[in-house]
Length: 285
Image 1 (cartoon, rainbow, N blue to C red):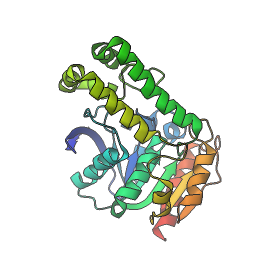
Image 2: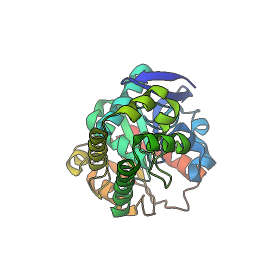
Image 3: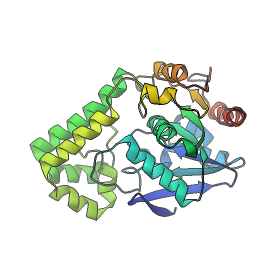
Image 4: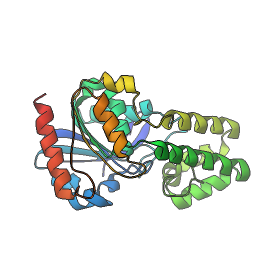
């Protein structure tokens, strides 16, 4: 797969097909990588990076600090994620695209819809995250990493990061830069030699920016209400991807459709049909 330097960060990406641009923002929380589009559930059945190429130019990438992409030791914000996504469109000479987000990728999609509306033809929002348990999980992971580095130090956290290569699968010791630390020796050296109190301030700001509310994240309620791009939502129905989060977005977005298809009826075939039907509807708005 090719790499590009986007907003100063090495980014692993993949482009398949040559139709209407479809920017894919992967599910998986902080493990938002290309491989997540074939890892589980409906995505594993659909294999969208292959199944959608007859209609779309499918653009997928490892979000910064995930997969084979790099990272930077700075506060993690929705604006930082927007910069990477829009820089990829610039790199590919694409003015605008339909934006498909899954899980936490929905939040990045909403952030793009707010910060870079001219780049968005329409939003496809699959399993929006939200609710108290989602907020609590995110804050707990950051707090767990902070507690670990306070007790054991940055060198111990680096070793955990190299072993775990992820922040989001039940063990927060390595921190949100785990994947990048595992594949970037220069970043690993900067990590272990940085000022610990300053790093803790970076973590606290990241935590408080990304997990500040039980509402769907990525954009505030007022920002969502101001979005003019049409949007289509397919709801999840578990502790992190609450149905209430999908309903909240339906209530806020001005041009929106909420799919009646709920898990477990969301098979690969059903999700693929939802994507195509949603784009057809949004193209008429």
